[in-house]
Image (tube, rainbow, N blue to C red; front, side, top):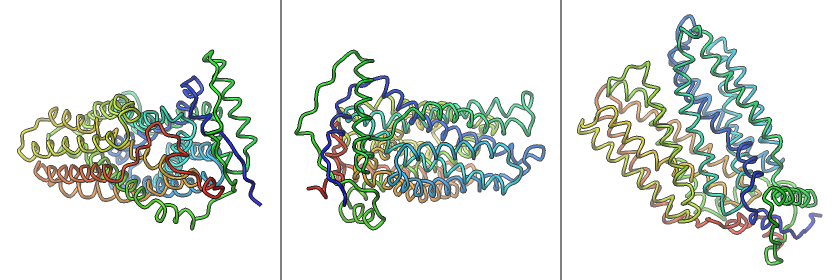
Length: 479
């Protein structure tokens, strides 16, 4: 017989002041997106090197197929790890997913053929996909409501620090005067593994989510964990925490797991508007980002005659602009509010992409003008994209949170990751700017559509407890 318990754990976690303990959580869980950005950028930069006979000797098409395997792995990993994260706990899975990424990255460095490259890229994608579900759910449940929006945005946006770093690093590692043709690209993957080991050392100190523990029959353990967190924060901040009142008590019926039938019922019967919102936000940003990134070098070389050897370096200012967007705008998502900021950033990004399309069609842009406008548009688009992940992770009940993230990530990445690059690739049309302009008009229209959906269906979750935004299924049963 399931046990009914009363707990104040959510309120106790949400009233905590920012402290060194929260920085531990951010460093242990959030820095993995830097690895994701590094991975994607490095592979794009070394594509031509892998096709050289004195390196791996596979074709550029076979390298591109490796990208498809990576995306497929990420989708499968998100679904598999997402289900297990809700069932077995956040910590077990964010340790396992990082461990898988670490192993797969090392193995990729030892690649000997196209088939081994594809297999290891699929395994790497499995690990990264698992991270999306496990990390976003854990972050939201460990960070106080007052800071949840900005922290979520900055962590997801840190991907672009990795992208900028990868772009800068690729020039060094691919320099044949420094490293042999068959060595530099392998070192790039080994470097990712070294960074993963550093993250793992920090991550092992990050605790299980007390919210997950209280639901899954381990309320006493959750209470002890929160007691320890509170004592540590009081000791390091030299301040006594205010007690939590009886009004903040939550009554729940503890459970071991949630089956797929109940997951589908909650997503599509109980929360259809939120499901439509989550899918629209994530699919739109996935289409736009994948379309732009996978054709980034092609546009520079085909339209602006940039030498292919330096085209990847333009990702450095692009990556920095993306990260600055979430860093500068993130706080406003907690103060101005989710709905106006999410719709606003999607709409401003749409305007920037539309301006870019118009100027490209008129052949009125030079290389740096194109980069400047692109950076301006994606300064806002990066905040919008990160807010999509934030929306999905905070607007569904705790029992299915990781699975909701996984499902919408897998579907949106599968659609946007496949259709965006294919469509933009066909529109490039050699060196004709008009074809590229059509692609940017489409991207602008999709971002504007997402802004409208957010205005209509958005959830005002700023500074609210997760349990107020979406009541746990366990609390509904107790009621």
